[in-house]
Image 1 (cartoon, rainbow, N blue to C red):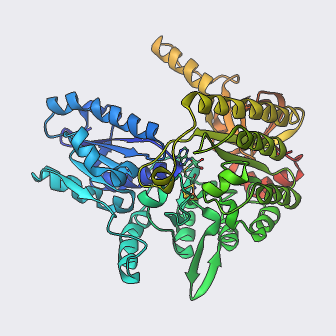
Image 2: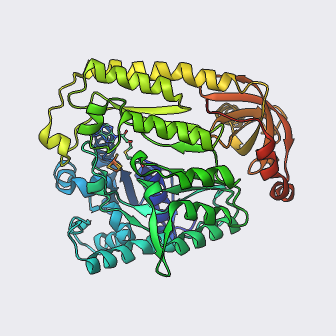
Image 3: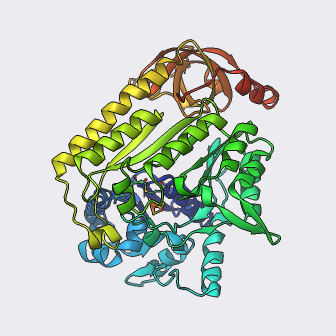
Length: 502
Ligand code: SAH
Ligand code: F3S
């Protein structure tokens, strides 16, 4: 490394959208000559990309920032920046609690990060970029100008040479208009705006050219995507078809779905287009109509269950994932029972459970009491997870004996640990046939199996021999070379037994 090369340390917390935002910010800084490093204390620029969805996530940010006080004292020209949702939500709080922070930048302004860093380096005391001025009441021109400027961030995407793009995210939508009463996202990420389909397709082509095989389309309510293409409306089902048609893209996924807007044309595309994976992440949040109403989710538990049934009719073997909040304001034992019943009925592949955390600015925080005791929240959380564990186990147990298509992502954690131990003992790292690889099925099940390292980045057929609730173990039946893959993968996928689901 050259002596004068500038260095950046970037840490990401929160959702997949943040992971993508961080990648794009890092890309901008790399283009300006910054070198990403892992040692925070040595970096010229330290950025923390933050999450505000729960209070706990913000506390984690504050403790991270607290740990930066000493390194900053030792290296006075270090620039410390807080970017993402917490920056947008509480810039004053950050500066008052953490006076050594130099810059804050909201998620809608990330294209300005390089300029903000320069301002600080040029001697400015503090640099701030927030979209707070952008409200749903902004004029169409204001919105368009703001939109063009952030769109530039995605348009400038330029993966570093050698960067692993096998599985890549593409943003299709920014913000959210739903205003669920518990959720801070519409305040931190602003109004819902869909990106032009042509930009998304160009990005998919660029990534496919560099080796991407799996694309995950990202949006807060991804299924409500709608854009104008030559004065014609492009809806989400069509976007899925068009991304699937990009040569080289073998798998397409999308998160997160909003049950209220979910239309059957998307299910038809999932059934008919081989590239679109049989996997749906569609948060229910609760199984109680009274709670759903107070959350302003715009659907009933019965409507949610009907939608899941319909998804299974259209797409046999579909794996469904969901989110739940326990202990939302006023949640009774009967409400909680209703959620257990819904989980029992829907047989999810996996669920994410969160204890309700009041967020300043939201309707629930303003108007309702956070009246479910912490230990009750904890208990309900555990109950949901233990019910789900049994369901997940029964789903994975049924896969034993079947052969599944796996996109091989890399070495398993255990294999990496063993390799590290070998290295620290000074032994030569030899790749043995027993090296454990890890990958995922089309239904997002994790599969661990011994296989040749050169199959990393390709598809493999794996026979499942054992399973826990969260992991399948198997033996390699066959790997596919890159050339073979293009011809055989869709047919392997079709001929395999139904995965996941029921
Ligand atoms: N549509 C978004 C949702 C963002 S928040 C997405 O892309 O995932 C992710 C999940 O966090 C939500 O589905 C919800 O279950 C949970 N969550 C949101 N606000 C919360 C709060 N105030 N307390 C606890 N959990 C919350
Ligand atoms: Fe949040 Fe509801 Fe939107 S959970 S991201 S307000 S759909």
